[in-house]
Length: 618
Image 1 (tube, helix red, strand yellow):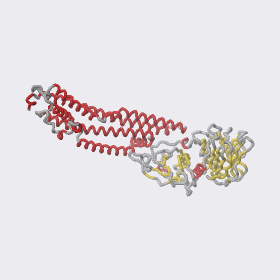
Image 2 (cartoon, rainbow, N blue to C red; image 1 turned 90 degrees about the horizontal axis):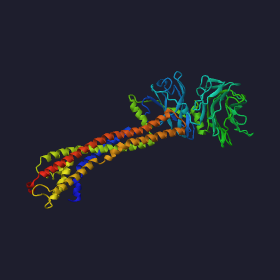
Image 3 (cartoon, rainbow, N blue to C red; image 1 turned 120 degrees about the horizontal axis):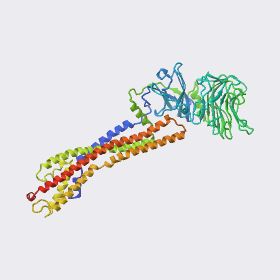
Image 4 (cartoon, one colour; image 1 turned 60 degrees about the horizontal axis):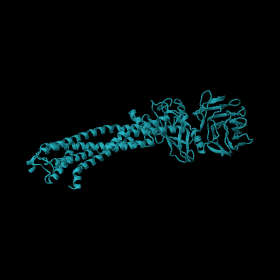
């Protein structure tokens, strides 16, 4: 018999293959739909968290019709002003602890802290760290969520500012010394002015004259050798002589931001007998609030900004000296050159902020700023959403790229395992019915070879394919003279050995077909947990690397990364555990079918041995 015919006799029939292909396509379509539903990333209009019932978009406009910021700025702490006209205070908790700020993609919570939240007067001042604002456009915005009575307080004052922001004084304290809102805690060591004065940003401080000043103790974080920025809101009472607004002087080096006859200047002395002083061209209008900022960029220039615009500058050679003495606000170190007026929102940075950053601070903090606009509130939320579903959504949003790579590979392994399982179930079902039908016919026949030409009736039966292989071998032996019988007593021993070899060979082929593809399921069982563990270790390494890079460690920063990492382990187990059960089930069925084949071979041999000479002569 030629090879082509033998291959057809041993192969799976065409109808069987067609059914498998149809089942394969159906299974892949169903799995694809399930995967899309589970892992589809929510779009920008999705609701960040179903527990929050309301949200409001805060739009940024840096175009010439808005704030007029031409450059991109990053990590700007902006002031969100809420009042009766743009916010419904009864919709939030009394202390504002349910407020949350999220990036435009509705994925990343933003750091913030509340300076003031008064539901009675319906005024709120919240500082929010905005990661990026693009210059010259109005495409950037953030979301503010509120309306969750069970929400814990989510404030992070230290995280609201970047590492270069070394001191921030809101000056809204009712008594005591002004406190620093940054993580460096450079609180004022002493203060003799007046707090709680109505100001441009909530409440501010007032200096009335002799003896009233504020002292900031020298600290390692107050090192300005890499750059310096000082900004504040100031209101002078009247045009007067030379007053020092900010200064430090150790007898050799000094730095001063002063006002002389309503004209602002900055003076830097490095102890070499020559002082660098900016031109006195910027004028502070008495009785009016102004935003004042001074930046010093080493080996570049000292720049003075007034109301968000560059007002004066001078070339700077060398670095800004690190304060070797306390920083004094409101007078000189010796207590002279006293300043009289009001101040609010004083900030110190250990870097030279850009012109766009200064402009964003002015437009974002002032009551007439044009940087931010508040859209109409939106109702939504996920009433009735279970905590488990909510947490799963949060985990999916926090999974990083490396985690998705591992999970994606695990999903492919899961698809392959499900396909193999579905294919094997189909084979077992069809083969079981075919074997049952063939066994009934085989037990009732008189001639062992009478079913040889009934292939179409038993196309799914593994027993029939073994039977047919044996019949093919018997026919071949019968064509050889003297090899088919021995004096009418049945087949010769040599012929019987050839027959046994043929059926056992076909039985081995059938067993191999049944076990085909099981290596994929075994890989899912053995490799799934290890791939998940790889993703976990990778994710945890990235989490701690990012903490080391940022220099900030808190639970809110660590938890999302760890949750993302552990999601990989969970994905590995979700693939491995079902694959383990499926593999055990398939292995058991394969063993049963192989046992049925072995029993059939023994029955077939017994039937042939019962055939005597007369049957052979016939």
